Length: 280
Ligand SMILES: [Zn+2]
Image (cartoon, rainbow, N blue to C red; front, side, top):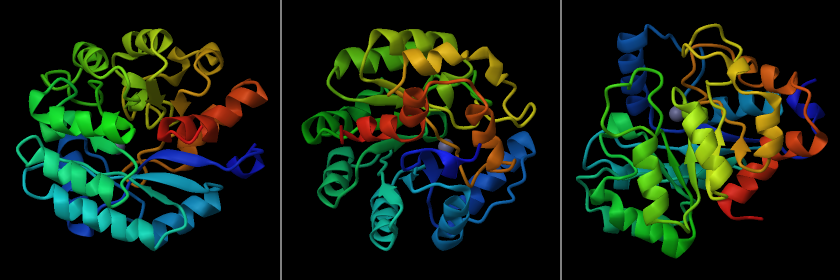
């Protein structure tokens, strides 16, 4: 089975769209830390051509600000690219040391559909009080937040990730839909348990569910088919494209090979993202 064989439109809920200079810096950092090389383009047109060829109709375009002072411009850039695109759903970001309220308010007013935080890299996470103005605006505007909140692939020592921080966020902002990227790896059991208890918790499959050997030292088989049935509508297909050291196919082929109901497949590849975005 291919993505194009699915009945509904396909959404990739975890794609990075950022200016070339930033993408190069991110890739250099990942190359230094993990030795990863990236065979995928970073320009919007080329990325979208490849995604469309793979059967993707729409993607969440995620930026993140690794230092203060760049988020506002970065958000504007993503919003402008999304304006030119039939596929990109623009997200925004902010750094803890920015004027958080102003940056996020401007981004939401300009059309950003949610927020993305790469918590360990940005050194600000779901329980960081500096981000409270951002989370309050997410509640006010009914926009979801996507966190890199797990410890994979190299953040076991970061104080900005982990289930405790994420749960603190859920307690503080019970009305905000929150996704923990990468199935919460390497704390996936705790994140799955939290998702079972809370309808506003989402997960994405990016990299964690890839059939790519030991890219992140996680066996996708640890997540049973029953999880995709039980949490249908809250597990979103995502890829981390184009910053993956393996093929795009590796991100979806293991998922499509699972024995899931039509409803679970529809939710995984589209419905859950709609729900995350507040569209249903
Ligand atoms: Zn990512």
